[in-house]
Image (cartoon, rainbow, N blue to C red; front, side, top):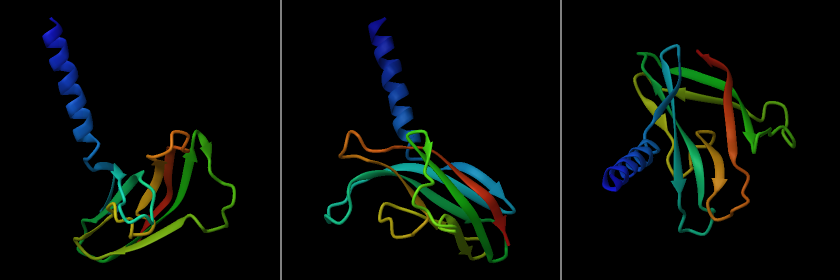
Length: 139
């Protein structure tokens, strides 16, 4: 019986860790699929701190070049982060060629295609608990 329980726990943990690396559809709007995935990013250059981020992938399934835009709202530790922001600061816009995609990775070079979730090296790091892409528009 213990062996069966151990195998079940191992399989469950394996599936959970595998699924963390998979793109998940956040939303589809007017031929554009928005995917997200959590990723632990480790930096050896000393310029960035190791962190968990939410990466975005934007896929244009249409035959036309499009522009997608949204307004971002984020919550850390259950509290919406609205302090120290200026109007329009969280407005995001991307152009995507026909039948192509934009995808973030741990280089974090594609501004606004990732969200900081938490620092990996600090126990008391604020943690992203929720985000919403509002006013999604494709043109």
